Image 1 (cartoon, helix red, strand yellow):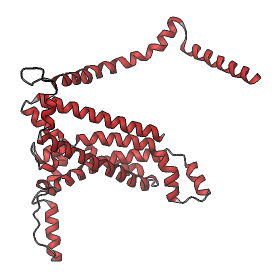
Image 2: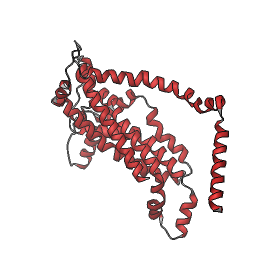
Image 3: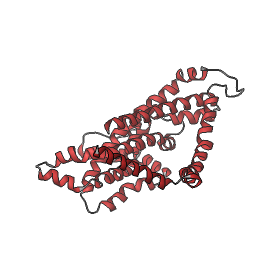
Image 4: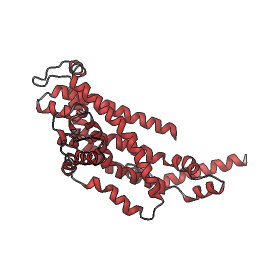
Length: 312
């Protein structure tokens, strides 16, 4: 009975402190709802510039582009029978599935040795340098390296002459299936920096006492990584995957500047399709495709969130 009484007293004190913190009456109402003053500007901006335009897109996806006549699901049927849409979806999905695991793994492999170096801060700045470079400059570099008379072919030609294994190399990397891997390399080169920084932040936030205690118990480096470091990097992993997933849809600028509106079919992405439909004023198909992409993105993010919650 004494234990129950003490519990009730503690609960009563907690409630009293909460009431005192929030206040009562008019003053308490102001405190409880003060957060609305901070949320309203952001919420108004999101509603005005994101939610309302998207609702307009949803509405347009059920109507014709010129007359605005209601057509039901016709626009959705048209895009799923459109070969360009199917190709763009296939290439975008392939690019995302290939790039995200590579980016996460490469960033982690680079972050591990950096976390043990005293000069990690300076090296992090070097890895972030690609993010500061203008896209046009990056594209110019890729063109100089990978086009038919580019530096890579000149190097391979020279190497073939020295070894006698092959002759002149004139591969058009941006005009063949290799263009996909050029785009993958561009994505990795540009985005590895922030991935390394996020991994480093997660690794360095792990208390060193955990690792020292594991070593005292006889755990080697690999066991420390497996049982101490990796389990404590779940938060960093989730953040990196989400950011990488979203950034994989921003590679369009590089692909567009390198190969134009109609590139080699292996790098014909959804952004190319949307741009071409916009130029041709096919807004009905564009709206239907945008709604489908939004649903897929929302579903993917919710799935990642559910996996993350289960892993907690």
